[in-house]
Image 1 (cartoon, rainbow, N blue to C red):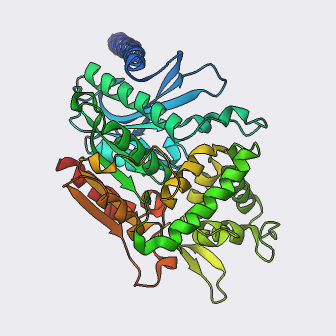
Image 2: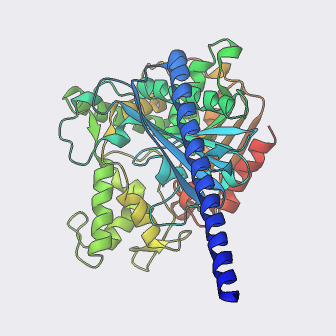
Image 3: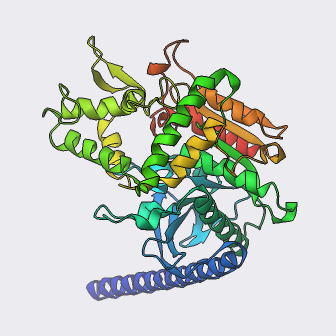
Length: 455
């Protein structure tokens, strides 16, 4: 009798569990359908405001940390094979596929040789929580971002004629589409249609300034931005940096000459991936890129002494480097100061997009030079948004502060991470340490969060 009662109870519990699981799965499926429909509706409305969306290819969701999830969508925005952008959202969920109502939102723009995930979400092979995007989302910020067009160009591409007109203007239009999609989706998911912040790292900050410059001429109700966070970028050089402006002009002419000869692509990402692959697969083998160095040393050198890789051109700042390095008694690179795991950086470098359009690089040098006419700096004084400039002393650092003085903003905060003594910028916190260093959370991400919450 007891055995029969036990069997009956077990069957009852299993049936109850199955019903509960089935209900949960059905709810999740319904929530996903609803979320996809919302993205589709938002894309249509965004297209009416900002540009052409041909197709919403897919919507995916993945867990980053606890109840923090990343939604990723791919949009076809033109007739060309690579006329695509990615749009990402990292946000806390109330339940599967149902985001919380978040008061503040920020759109993040990545820089050269990266995409949204490698810059702001999940470095390959690393804990998903160890990123600026996940950090802010865990604190209740609604984080958005874009993958620019060139991130979708495969390693096998050989014809880059389609990149001819991919310049700052083109990318700013794509970013506007992503911003409109973000604001509309937020309105449809309970977070309201308020203006949002924009953060740009490196080249992303160039696009941020260009975006704000253009938006300043729109009626206030038509504007998108609540504040801007340029990270380690020089937009304009001061008179004290006239030699650096002249070096930018030289780089402009060199890149423009390539463009005029029919080269519309930069393959710096491909080169970086090659160095990373050799460093991972044969670290002690002798480098064919830098004679006398091992493959590991060559990769470390490019990352920690980046300023020495521009020859015969000059670097953007005298000791500009991606990551602060450590060196032996002979000056050979040994590792990183603020990243304990070499594999972390090798993984990020290996995931770099291979190709990038040359157009925006030329634009950047033209803007920096101060002598080439471009349509991206005509209204800087009309930008009155709150500004947080975040720099790295071993990157563009203090040189990027001058750009903020050209704005009409009365609310300007400067945060330059400087850990070495004066004159030791070559060893100081680097350009990419801002987003990849093990101590970036305390030195960079927490101050960004505090600034966002105070505005």
